[in-house]
Length: 437
Image (tube, rainbow, N blue to C red; front, side, top):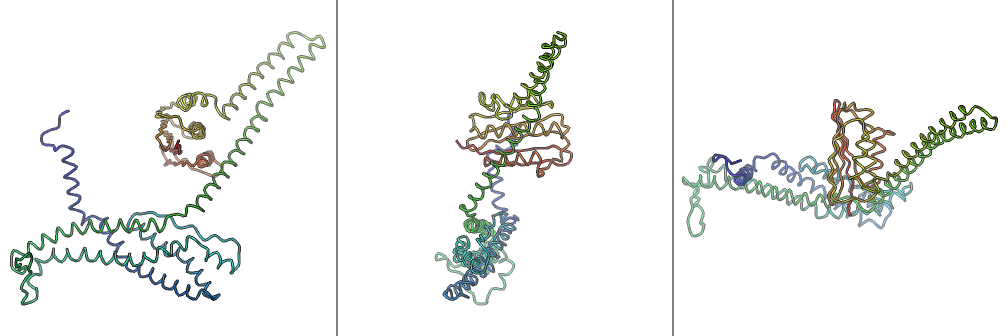
């Protein structure tokens, strides 16, 4: 298909669009949000400087009991300043940063409270960032005022050049005498001011990027305790999930195959009594036939149970072979899209398989859907499973429900499950599983 001559090439359109966007930077909303963020840095920075100063007085008095208590209180109070900074970043920079973890309380009591505050590594780290952060925030606010005030004064100069001080002999620039109070020089100054406003917008964006970097470092999560808590939670979830899985196997064996085998034994016992008593051969054959049918049912239940533990087709063929078999069993038509260039780790394979089985079962029971679309995509870092049905929607992750169990299973291997199910449908479940190999 040829491009009409009146339509500029795509590259030309991109350049022109980028140029227009650059020129319109001074009137964009994000530029003024960034400016407001930087200007608010003046009072916030002053608060930081005052806070660090008071902490210094508490440190100077630290050899006394009251001084130690004040110092512990100031170290703990650094979290209040992070809340202010987090609010400023979220409202004006659209930057959602995590709050630092609370102070860990080892045991009650005022002495332990002081000790916990003095040994709070997070609090001391934030305090160390407040020391240069306060002056830096004030300096950024001052720079923001300058970069906007000077071009704004130049832009409006044609409107007030007549009111320049009397006797002003102009400016000497590169050996040339300029008289900005004589026309058309005010027009040139105004045009230079417009260019300065465009430059000021981009300077403000650069200053905001610098402050964003400071906030990210200041409010970064503590890797050690957070990681330990995450690993502990995932371990507990894995243990609880394994226990629930074993209880389900025990229940299925007790209520299914065991009942069938008891019935088989009873039928064979009746047949044996008939043979011992010279009974009717037809009655014996009937008992044996019933026992044979019940044995087949018990074997079928055992196969289903074994498939639920870890399906053989998944071991032999991987997800490429196991997921189509799983989709074929669903009574609702399933469209399956697979893009798995490399086989993922075993834990990711089994989690994907059981998640898809549970999601298809839920859709069959509750969604009243007519079609289900399943997509499985893997790259070097993760595997994504997305199940979308055109049913009634309204699904929710409730405690004790099937979706809550899937969330636990997914999080136990470091993954994440997202649910989007508005009333009236459609329902989309996305599972992300890390599989760095």
